[in-house]
Amino acid sequence: MTRYPARIFCFLAVALALGLQGAPPQSTGTPLAKLMPAGPLLYVETPDFAGLLHDWNDSREKKSWLESDNYQVFSRSRLFLRLQEAQEQFAAAAGVPIEMPLLESAAGSESGLAIYDIGNLEFLYITRLPEARAMDNALWRAQEKFEPRKVADIPYYVHTEPSKNRLVAFAVVRGYLLVTTREDLIAGALSALSGKPMRALADEAWFAKAIAAAGPRGDLRLALNLETLVKSPHFRSYWIQRNVSELRRYRAEVADLFRSPQAIREERVLWRDPVATPTVETAAPEKSVLPDLLRLVPDQAGVYRAWNDPSVEQALGLLQQKVLSPRTLATLPSTVAPAVALSEGQTGSEGDLETRIDVPPLTGASGTFEPAALKKLLAEANLAGALQLGSTRALPGEVFAGTESVVVLEAATDWNAEALRTALLSAVQGLWTTSGLGAQWVEQGAGETDHSELDGLTHLAMAVRGHLLVVGTGGDPVISVLECLSKAPGKESGTYAAGFRHAAERGEIVKMTRLIEAPLGQPFGGAQEPGGHEPWFFSENLASLSSSLARVESESIVVHDSGPLVRQTVTYRLGK
Image (cartoon, rainbow, N blue to C red):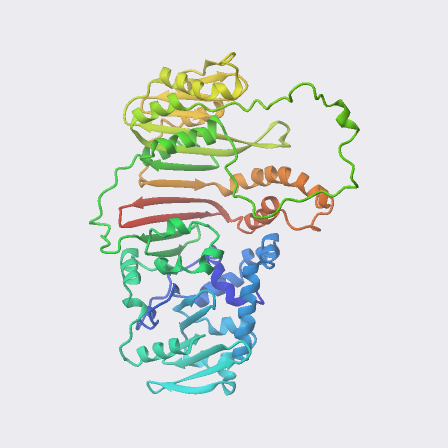
């Protein structure tokens, strides 16, 4: 990052975790969105860019990340190299090296960055900066290399690098510094500063609607024109979440980050209605069972997810994938041709002499999952909510790590415990038994922890408490949920909630993934030569990112869906 400060915008979210922050400077004068010409795909704004940049440069997170495997892998990625190429072209056009001192000298208080083309990185940057500081900037000192021009009697400076046809233009006027890669953008902004009419970003429907719904601006604000953004091939290629089909349902998003010493809070608003966006006061009230479900999350749970009004298919899928028949999900088809092992014409080996050819080969006893009876009960229950819990655990000897899961389903009426035991046994008996032999429910515990466990090859436990069904991969996780029934319901409602306890889980997750990846690296010498191989994806690459963000103890999200608006609150709890 010390060499490539143009990418600082990509990592401002990390910088927000740092230091003691006071109230951000208040905006004065014309809103920057009124100076930005219409048409950007995304817009970043902060009331104190210089403060954010200072926090990032002084942070231990920055130092740790730059030394991490995650950064080393990223620095060899196609995205990084494309950004590096664009930065070198910008430096050639500007005639000054693009390094951290230039960024620091160009970082003012209230600042905005609008990106109009992702592929060509066409942008306009505006910051409020005292004229004395702006004229001490490297761009101003190199102005003799630029061609002076004027618009609305305001001077600005332009230079084009001929080989790549890269343009850089800047202006210093009335306490603003403007930098852009398109001359029409700076001309429009300067015209707006002079009072001439211009269609600005603030006048676009997607921006105005989303900003009106978002409320107060945070320490950092990001506005996305999703309707146009998802059409960009560069966005589809580099958007890491790979959920473009889901984003097509929305027209715009605004995300605000708020900092405090204890937490970072992100408030998101996604707008999907092209006609009207109701305010919070006029939106229909939510009927949520999440407060009743979230009280059942034990302190030792590593991850939790809760839904309001789940479908029968969703509930059945949770039970099957997390508890009854855990399995890997289907993988994407490979686009790489299979490898061919070349030999000297020899087929087989001496060991094949022991292979019988007069009897059919043994087949794997994979069994089948038979959910028909269980699905019928779920359909009749009129499900009101679902909760899924998961965590890692150290296995005996603390050498290996495993996982445990629980699914809680809340129905509109009381569950029939006996019918559920029969349906659950019917669903799984084909997986572990022949004709159900040797599989039966055994009552365990007493009082508040009374539950049933399946006596067989698998660890399966269940308990019914009125409207609540609890099914888990063993007695211990089910008991931990039952012990939370005495808690009072919380106040947090919504349509969806989830959380991850990063500090508690990261150690066991790294241990588990290393045990999986280390044997795979042995044929390439990776296990014997630490650091002498491409970092393993989970236990080294992502683990190093986890180490860089070790101060983040946990993260949670709560979603409210009112139809036209989807509101999401993401909270990152910080340690010392």
